[in-house]
Image 1 (cartoon, rainbow over the protein chains, first blue to last red):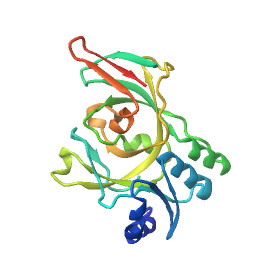
Image 2 (cartoon, each protein chain N blue to C red):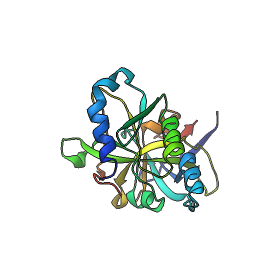
Image 3 (cartoon, helix red, strand yellow):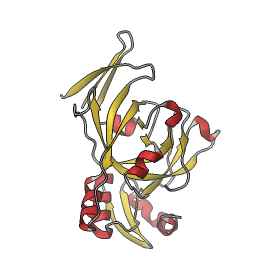
Length: 80
Length: 148
């Protein structure tokens, strides 16, 4: 599964990441690389550092938010 | 403030749009000697009921994107529970009425892969994009205006 390691790192380190809640974290493998105020800055840094290798950008939330979509659409649950 | 006005279609407030690879990924592709995929021209519904924008998987595949995040999403199709869905980084340009009639271009945003083909659409423009705009929906005259 793509980003499996990065997502595991996020979940494992969430207790210590909470101090940066609201910021975007860049994770590569097991490494917490940096924190950013905007999604675009985090994505830019990811591609600058890791090019086309997998990396994760995720907004830090103590409780994961749920996005509601009122239209009956089918979200994909596996990577492309 | 730049703006455009369009007729409300039978599907609702629909715009022509281009989905493209973000600037940073473009640079990474160039550095790797790879071709930059051409922007995908699509029809997108402006949807105030969508908390996050979604793009049809076939469009994202055509752009050769790889997953860079995930989000929890709840729709009527998920039967009362939220599901975790991969997310991808793209830019969206609204072309308004005619091809080449370029209006709003988003910064790089996070979108979900959402199957919309049966609805005759390829994307939902959600509130994550609309938060940068003013949307005026004139139901009486069947048109809508987006200022940005």
